[in-house]
Length: 201
Image 1 (cartoon, rainbow, N blue to C red):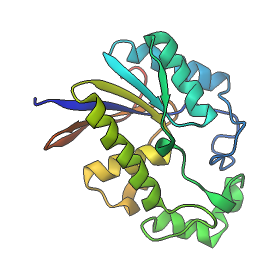
Image 2: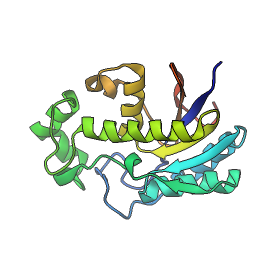
Image 3: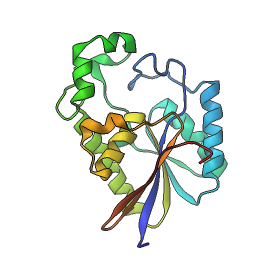
């Protein structure tokens, strides 16, 4: 296989209120006991890989997940703002039961290519910045393996882009907490080696 970069695209581990509240970019959402155990298992799995660099979103839950990997693999952690969670604007902090009842939220989930988040960014804007970050990392670490800790929708958006999948269909991808998806990016080709892999995979 020609030279390329293998990316392990990781969703942060679990935290309190996961699946209950749209945390977005709000601070104060640290890993809970379940999340710390998930992150430790993930770090153990990645210790079997020749990871050369560890990159993370700036949010606590991502940085804390990355810290387990960094400790196990003896790597420094680099923060990449373009891998941050989507800016959910006015929806930040809403409970999901309230969001599901809002027509704007339903539109956003079914037409992410065009829907706008009140006071936030579009899904296409989030995808563009995340893909740009991956391309920069590829240029820097070509020939190596890189672990990237981010957020569920950001991982989905990156995978959708490189798979040639319309962004409106990205909800079909399942990305669980502390899962990893494997993306290989070469000079003239791309391949996806796995999606939503557990720590044992």
